[in-house]
Image (cartoon, rainbow, N blue to C red; front, side, top):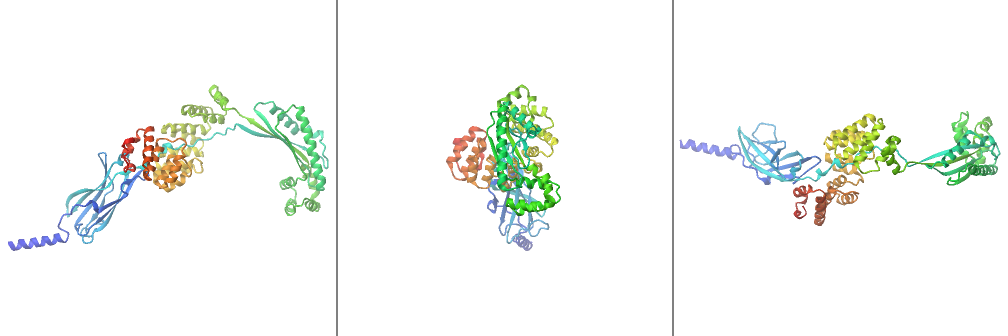
Length: 561
């Protein structure tokens, strides 16, 4: 009996020495490293990688170990996907760890971020199955806390796209009339001065002179000679036509009692080759391509005329159809039409909105910073002009800025139904989707708004939420906003981020909080404390956030919270 017992003990010892019979020892914390540590928010998630370096003579050959990464925070435990590893004697498809040599294991983790995770611990739980015997080993802490700076990306702070008005305070109008001359003559014929075109010009000028909202800015006379005959003769002819037309116009303005007209200017062109080329190109003359080639070959006006005269088959046609149109003086009046002043627009809206055009109403809404009045004006516009998508888009824009995202989405969709091609409505629907963390829908809507100038900050914010920092920086470009500065901080371009924050025209609590983070990352304690103090002053809720923010772990900030 004693001999048998001795043999059994020897056999058992041999089994244990080969790493099959003994139980798994507990894992040591220093077997593991976590990247990053502390964990960091990327987009809307908290990803990381735990690497385990298992020493030789540790992993039992007949054991299977399931490792579950668990993030614990505020009494909550959130588990990531478990990973299973096995010893050399186990039949299975899991990664094998050698008993003699040890091995390396990689355990990915990923959690959907929640603010309470800032103060947290990443633990590894171990469940062992050894030949059907199941037991649990002590948990090991492998990371401490979450840096949540990326979570400061705020879709709600992005300015929605405004559907712009086309209101112009001053609209310039041009009134013109041509006076034609006979060949080689500069006198103004009565038939030309009584033409409908000339009479209409004088009526328009008299009306403008008597209208307080119209201002005659300038009257200009351009006189021409057709390009046949010598250059010297045509120069004198065009100059005489200019002088006669200017004298006529001066007298007529006095007769019509038009005294305020800016300046009356006059010029002449001896030979109107540009007009000749334009009229020939638009004509049905059979050999017009040949004529145009002559014009391109010769720049000297006398050679041009000679060569064209040599085209005897078409010159008579030119003389009848083209050249008479080039003997004229053109009178052009530039008139500014002055629209309603800001005060007049506001008064008209308050009195009777229906007296205003859609663009006047849309512009009037931009004259106030009061979101309620702005919304009232856009609502009145939508009632008076229900087929114009801009009013509904802009109602939604105001509701978005007021934080009523459901109402805003309803109006953005209404605007898109009226005009499916409206990029503003598409971008703004994407913003609401972004607020709701529906990144796929946001991406689709932003794609439909491609080319819109306002799109960059929205795209940049979406890329931040996707964790694409480089893409975000590129999309923001030169935008001066908290989100743009955040992207630069995450990209570790601290000088650029500081410049961006300094350029924000209306800094808020988040602006100063980001400045404090910059101070922490660049070792500037005074910058940390002064900016945190201002951030908390503007938003007291940031005190609790700062107290748990690992960005400030190296600083004693209790005195400023």
